[in-house]
Length: 108
Length: 116
Image: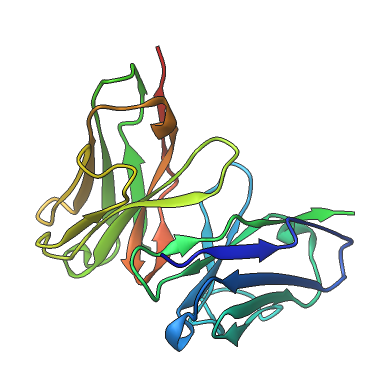
């Protein structure tokens, strides 16, 4: 099983700032089979990016995914008030697809 | 517009059983693989079970293997999760999700509480 580690656990930033979230895998995630999700309190997760760097339908271009192998990053270029949430990465290279523990992006 | 709507969540005693359902609309349900993902209170996401488009292939997390059964009725555009021998640690919101490797669409979830 591939174990994902996300850092930091909590990120305190102000609107307009840049957010950089890290996701590290215990072994290589082939073909960049890595997705990112956003979850707000009381809501279901929402797919942001897949295949490491492809944005899902309707996702603003301030969200970008990058990385390969064992190191992946989600960048939010300029935080908007609606972006404060918990973010999860998920690998789908090996079954079962596993999730990271999440990074909470909170308002500073 | 595609939609997934879960139902059936309830308060159940330890050792009890429950079936949760997911009604799909707005897409060709019969052509998609599906999964259940759960989230315990204040915790992260945990994949629970997967089923292929025809129902011929199913898989389960170790934590539920032998107790939970996933099924689908393509004629009714519905996905199910039969949960037996429920434990306190099964308490969670259960989401159905369209499975394309990653999960590209999610329902709003149904809450299952296992407590005496």
